Amino acid sequence: MKSPLVSAGQDYQVVPVDRIHPHPDNARKGNLDAIRESIRANGFYGACVVQRSTGRILVGNHRYVAAVEEGLADVPVVWVDKTDDEARKLLLVDNRTTDLAVYDDAALAELLTVVATDDDLFGSGYDDDDLDELLRSVDAQSPEMGSDECYTPASLFDTLDIRFDLDPASCPRELSAVPADRIYTVEDDGLTQPWSGCVWLNPPYSKPAPWVDRFLEHGHGIALLPASRGARWLVRLWEHAEGVALWNGVFNRADGTSYAQPFQTLLWAMGDDCVEAIGRVSRVRS
Image 1: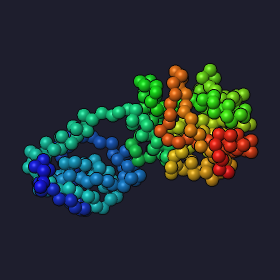
Image 2 (image 1 turned 90 degrees about the horizontal axis):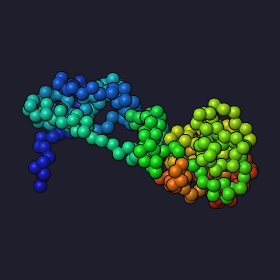
Image 3 (image 1 turned 90 degrees about the vertical axis):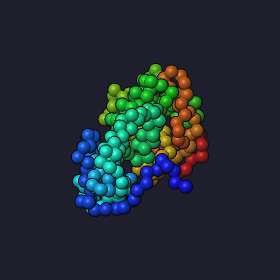
Image 4 (image 1 turned 135 degrees about the vertical axis):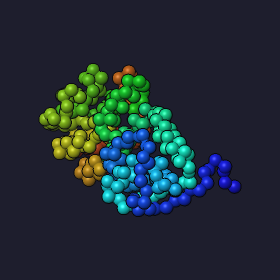
């Protein structure tokens, strides 16, 4: 039996773009650049909800405009039988319910971090600057939640039993357990500095790709990174690193608490001494 709350007279159809048109009373101003990027990255998803009698779009006005600008010839449509008054009300409520929604910032930060780590943020509506700002905000509100400020515990270095010449992505020296003779903090911008000797790398997990490229180019050291299925940088590590081992530990926070990342973490080694060192943590694939 059909629920009385499900509107009758809804039909799905794929139609030419010139058969429908934006509603002239739509007061919403959408970000067409972001929607076009999404269409390029993800394709056109969902459907425009359209008043059957007029061809006016009630839901999906900007998605339709972006689709036309991207050269789509057809779009999926759900036809609805609405009077003009009912159509205007639906136009309003669809926009308003979006306005009234709120985010769980910690959950959003974790999701964006996973997406950024797996591939990149193109087509998500967010960029690296958005993620950095969100991580800073979440960390300030609740330091136990996800951010790039996670420090490797001394116990891992006790097991590795190796000394490093450089940590190019270091926290402040007083918070670091890394046995490195030289460090670069965020103020130094380690990606632009010279690297030499045996390197320890625990980079920002929100955007590891440039650090991975630099690590592989340098060719000597150990990198600690998440096991992110499908990430392009992980594929590069798998192809070029000389050894990889699983680490099941947890990270430290500046306040002394521990933090477990929501994904497995791997040690990647370049150089015979580093491959030998990660072998003391777990079985090495070489």
